[in-house]
Image (cartoon, rainbow, N blue to C red):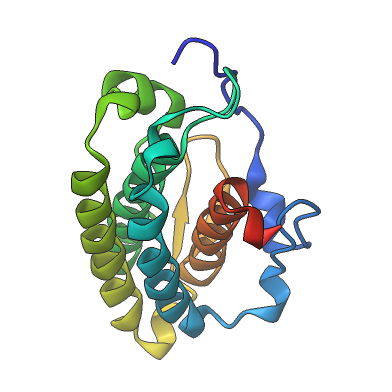
Length: 176
C-alpha cells in the first residue's frame, strides 16, 4: 500500500459542479434518487471483483479493483453512520475518517474478493435503506466534517453518490 499517494483533495465541490473525470453532475440528481443509484452500483461490484485481475494493481500507485471495492464498502458504512447522526442529532460533527489509513490498517489488498463483494452489497443496502427513510423535512438537516465543511442530508447524499460513481469510473473501462 506504500506506493499509493494519499488523496488529500477536498472533493466537496462535486456537489456544486460536474466532475471533469467521471462526468457526475450532482445538479442533475434528486437526493431521493440516491438510494436507487447506490443499489444499482452495488450490483456491479460482485462481477468486478470476480475476475482474476481484481487483486492486481494496474500500476504501483493505483489501487486494484479489490482495494477500490473495500473502499466503496467502507464509504457506504461511513456515510450511513453520518446520515444517521444527522437525522438523530442537532448539527453533529462527524468523526474524522482517513481513507488512506483505513486502507493500510485493514490491509485492503489481502481481503477476499468474495467476502468484500458480500459486505459491499450489504453496506450498500443498509445505507440505501437509510436514505429511503429520510423524511421530507429531513433532507435539510445539517452535519459538519472535522474540517468545518457543512453538509445537509441532501448534499451528503450527492457527495456520497459521486464517490461511488467516480470509483466505478476508476475501475471499469466501460464507464469511461
